[in-house]
Amino acid sequence: MAVSITSDPILSVRDAEDVLAWNDERKTTLAINSVSARFLQHTNRLRITSGSVTEYKRICGVNAFWLRATPVSSVTSVEYYTLGDLSSTYTSDDYTVNLTNGKLVIHGAIPQNTGQEESLKVVYTGGWSTVPGDIVFSALQLMRLDKKRLDGALGVNSESREGFSTSFESGDLPRAVREVWDRYRILA
Image (tube, rainbow, N blue to C red):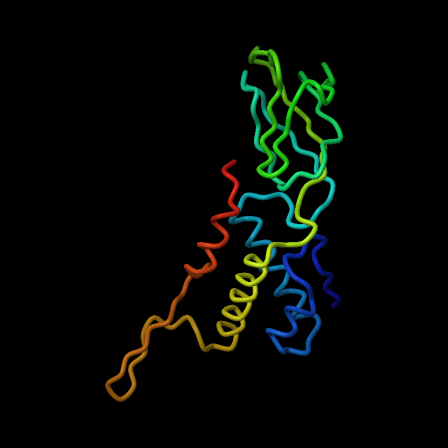
């Protein structure tokens, strides 16, 4: 059964094959997809690599929103909807966006919450053109750890042999990986 790589991988097949040395394209692809999905889940991001994103933000009288696929390259459109119908379209003069952290601020009055279903639709290009090195390095660390777990060499809480005791780290994300990924976390 063929497995295709995610459209938004955290690292290249070549990098992963260098670490895993499985010589099995299917296993390597599954490992890349797994690490990529865990990064997105841990950091609350929508994308890793640069691409088109459509986000809907619920309006509650607030004029600032955080886009979840940073860094932002460009904003294509910002539209305001009430009960699913387009109410207004904002021009680039009506808002500012911080391209680094993705904070979008609507200038002037934003409609107050009327108790109806209201939302802001933002279409933009976001994500890294090149994934930062510390993310790639930590993803490779996690991939090595996953390989050890699959090989049965990791995950034991403690093991005693001839009076010596060894402890292994278990859990989904080791502390070193979590510390790097936390710097890229988006609070949604």
